[in-house]
Length: 623
Image 1 (tube, rainbow, N blue to C red):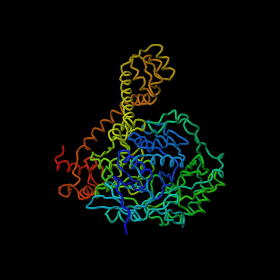
Image 2: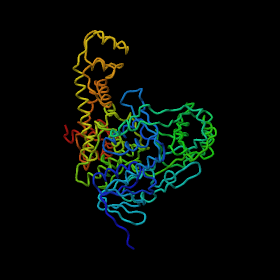
Image 3: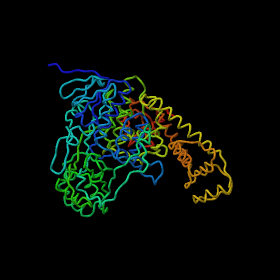
Image 4: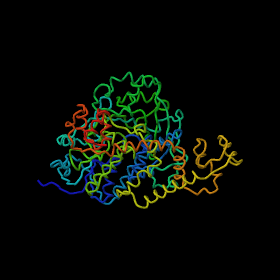
């Protein structure tokens, strides 16, 4: 019986946030691309929280945009509330977060995909990968069709052998009741790929009409909305926003949970998978933080055209009756009606230490992967990996050098390096604390850091790249001018300083020195600067940050120099570390297993000590 056989340059397996970015990158770079999904209704689906961005995740979205990705543009088109988090802290941890209209987000992304040349969307379940002599040749679907290709990118999300669980109820479905992908895992294992079993969870969705908002704290968006995409005109997105709400659990809530822990699949052993440490279920929080009298509950709209509200902070896998009982103890939810039960979801993913920093498998040439399939959590982490996997799959086919963003270049670099180098026994979540060089990896300068890379790859238009170059020149030129403009200790200057409760001058200084004072800024000293040019707001932002944090930035750049030296010392991925005398047994095992590409990467492997690195450098005669 004949089966369908087709040929493409690239096959993308999965159409979540990772799959969308991977598919768009490949197609935009001119490669014939096909993206498979178990349901076209799951394209860019937001099965959990209804927002994009947040602490450190906002950095990822900005970096995706600077490289030529789509997520930032899409949330700018579909947000219903936007807020810059951590404004009271330094600029390194400022992070943009926007509530999305879920249906609009999915619809807009699907429209972009369907309008992109070289891209085919196919609803079918991929059940096998085709590998010959360690090289990927394509995939087979459950129907028996064969799709031959030069590269395959796996972005299966939480769909592989997915199981949704609450109480005694266990459904073998993907998120939101969509079909699971039950056959690909066996094929991957047959080709020697090591698999993990992870789990994540989601809270209940409830009917807005059953909520008493008068007992909750209203949470507003920013008066002036800042876009995610550097390409979005800020004026085009100033609009009326929808409120979110804050309430809290209490001791009664916690008692109901404690009294029913024996019915929780999380504690009874029904759930096999390892859950995320930094996004625990409410039962997890009550057990692990027993001293806490209350936990926050964020009540967030799922969209403009639905009454469903998301109860952030109360994900659970407790039985249906317990969910009702515990939710009704929360102020404002006394009469709540559940639209969708909270549930946990288990799924298969890989041990990401099988990957190169390019996100290509060590053991199978041409096979790439990204997203939750790599053991991470979150839409933003997924999109970032999908973009890099798609870019590198394309560059490999085109015979060009693949890209590796290092830890000093981008949060994306930190994310991928952590996944492929460190031992992760739970879903990985990005946090600002994971980035050693976060003062220079700010979300506000992602375009200045990464646009050149996006342009050279071919994803960023020349017009946009030139705009970024002009922006950098304007910043440099104005900082240089401010460092040279002198002001004296005259009456006008002293009056201005008194206005901002700043220490009076005893002698002359420069405008830059004044701006360095915490209470002053570029805007504050404007009246002392008659030659001040007219500059865009984003240029002024960079001027303020670069002048105020100049000493700290220079110190961090020196640290980066040392880091770069170790990263530049390349290692042969085929080298046998058992041949080095003086290396500890654990170090030999870890180095042979990880196959690090540089001394820097080797130094970050758990179980490889500084002494081992010294032995390595001496043996390989690396200075």
